[in-house]
Image (spheres, one colour):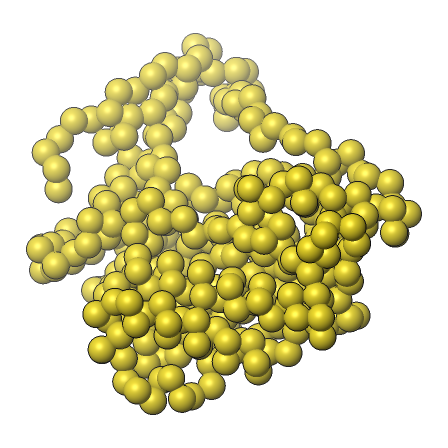
Length: 363
């Protein structure tokens, strides 16, 4: 199996040499971190077996959030932290997608456009859900930015995890949504388009958008995803999975990278072979701006609304006669002791020594 890190180690220097001055700081950082991840350049530890004279080296990870080698355990840790927020009610996944005509502008202005995507989509969904024809109260939303399709193409959209109902504005009642239904997506798409357009009018970027964009339908999709537990497990991979996992990469040789993907709506996987330069370009376009927050909370789940979230939980518990589950109401530490390294030959514990980073000139 070939890894993304190995592809960058093999072809990243040539990519930097060709595009270095044009690369965004976040892209430069990602290339550097992934190239050095788990190599002697970052230091680490060496484990010695005094009996067998065997050494085992374990180098430090880069901890870049776009590195496939560093994100494996992050999803489970996030799931544990979210237990306090769950409500005992069915959930929905509502997805807002930017039109294709906006993708080039979005790719070149990620900080502005991603933030506007979050805010306009969240505002549209909260406004429509507050209508008495649907929920009639305040809902909660967990939003997650997702920018890639399965072949690494650029496809910016945001997923919102939403409980099936809301808290009345006076805080006295829980207002359930209809079974298997949250809101109508057609008016939601229109409201999303209007709010996004209003936000963009405040910026010079608005002049770059074809006028036809504001007349076409904007795609919004809503589906029931079961309980809160099931919904969080569904959403976690979107939060911590990078654009492509290492297990999907078949080979990287002779300037070509081949990987496996499954087209949307199909079960049969296909192979895609790209020049290494194009593979790196596609990968980097999903690297987020530095410090950009890709998981955001709105409505009942916003940090300033925790008292109302507690009211909603108490009402639901009373209505549904459900006793609070200690596993979902108490925080759990995700810190685990470092596993003991044993000698592969004799099975005895190995002694640990620190390896300092290897200092070298910047690439």
